[in-house]
Image 1: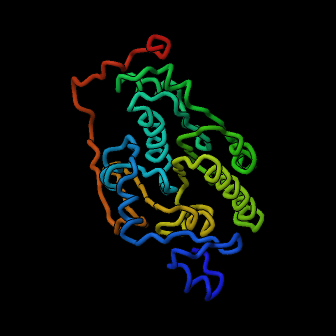
Image 2: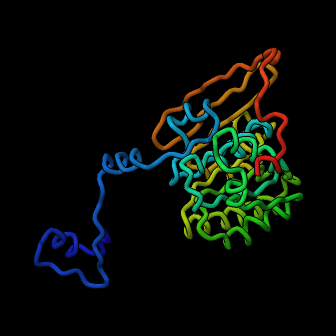
Length: 270
């Protein structure tokens, strides 16, 4: 509540007290009520079973997620998420996809949709894609253009600092402008936001872009892949402790195992 003076504090519990326009009363929630309300929010699958396990079910809509690490696994997660959003076959939603890693492939989207018994055409129609080929283009997209998106359920930003030019002051200032643009989208439609960024080679866990980007995310996950495994580390979450999971990769593909959709074309699905 807005407690503007001692009188307000003393009279707030009096049923005969009428609050003036200068002293509006807003009720408090207990910490437990806040925790319970978060638990009841619907989750959106990331499309990655290991990441869903790490996050205890998937992405939560009122949080901003920052996935830090290698481009290949983080980009794959964003592509999977863009399809998993429509698992309930509700095609009234829209997904905004800002691609700074140049990893968005309509064929892969169509293949994933078909494998989940979803219409590739309907899924692709509901994904709004914008590509950035330079750091300046990425800043322009995030600072000015994404705020024009309407009724966006999910905003996916791939490689926000993949094209980071240098560590001069103006690069950080531009990043802050981009973050301000993302905040406008949050205020407007409150979508789920998932951002990916490469890890800074001089840090064990921070992204390229430094503290400005690191402190923007509510949930921070470090994902690193080598020839043998993919490691997922939950660095920060408002409800869960830090933890780590590993997925071992097969050395050779299994013989005789062919995907039924492997040789289909996108036009055939559509």
